[in-house]
Image 1 (tube, rainbow, N blue to C red):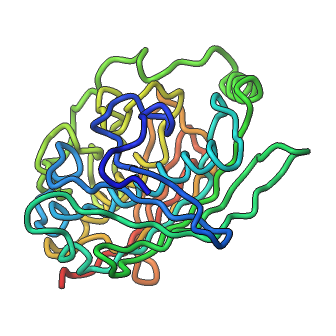
Image 2 (cartoon, rainbow, N blue to C red):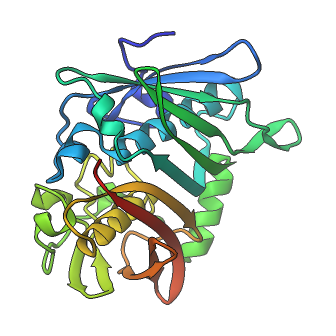
Length: 300
């Protein structure tokens, strides 16, 4: 299995090489698969944190590698069309609080992902959904797991669905100007270093407004016609960070996406603490579009 060079960006729906971390996905010889990803020693987006543990190993980077492994798996082994639209319905992650200590002191790390063969949801002979589960390890040591549920639509069916939902023509992130950062919170409040990475504005207790920086290559690597699920997850992580002591880092998250969130309409966020988690609900035009539950623990 290739571990020294990342895959072609287009094979996992990416445009910029700096946003590609997956190196390979191969059958494991017993009906399952194994995948690998390079975790860079430093990254303009995934390393820009105030918490040293997140600078060493950002859980959002681990999540992104799983998403890339899924995309490669779907196209290469389950014959999902190259131009099919991927619809993320659910995403979860659990990472040990001390996982960052397994990253090399100098140089890149190598994440290994193993998964049993997912049972495809079929429409005729075509794969129309997968729900892969990943067991994660660094340097041979288990660090957590992730799973997701994804559906696929043909390009024509997706366009018909989206235009019907919008009641008009689609716009993409490339059509919009950079985000207006009026009211954006200070980066340190949400555990970030750079203003450009902040996704919360008008923060007031348990409420905030979502910023959608279409100019951000880490979040909008290629043109999108809706707000991506990973942006909601990062926003929920930032909200939870703002409501927690500085020593806390995200160790798990569970996200459910209820509807497409449009790029050109405001999104409000509300947070509530429930069962040891901070649950963030995202609403647009009075409709729930995403719910993300985040758990934070002190760094060990």
